Image (cartoon, rainbow, N blue to C red; front, top):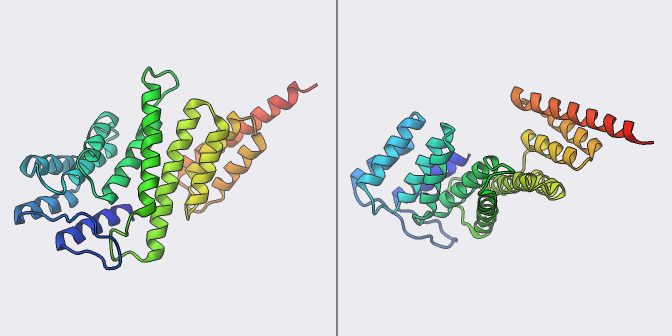
Length: 263
């Protein structure tokens, strides 16, 4: 759905349309058939490397384009698929600096918040700078979503609400990881629970993160319960299933050790 949102929003811009009954966003339109062709090539790239190359070519050929931010986002997205964190951050931040439309802005903010939170360690010298970015980007994404008009007229109101809920869930998840690095486990628990409450669908990976936070907070029964909720979800990815089982075993072991220490 996320890719469909961007594709649909870009198609709307290419057609020059504005939805009735909603505030008109900044008018964005390609300035030549060549720019349209380059945009479509970027959208239709068959691999991360092809997407990166198409985005690079687009920015070089059309440096004043209204879709420059979208090209930088596409490049960051390509690097995300290649697990290249450094380039993801470079091009994601360039997208934010290039006057993005709201759809591109929100997804770039969340991509950066997620990536930076996962790559920040307890002893990183620039830990505070990174975590401050996670918090700023997550808050900015949620604030933008409050007033963001539907970017694709083909989305029903229900689909749009589901999309926004998913994005809010992603922001809270990034903030939960942020609080885990800060070792504020009660706040991490609150953020992961907020992520689950916001999302229309249960995300098993969030239950596993929640369980880890409960373990750190020495709330072992809650950790086991969170893992059990993940393990009963249908079509569970094998990697997430293994993580949930491992976290549950850890919680039970820690619970047993804590009980053995009691007089």
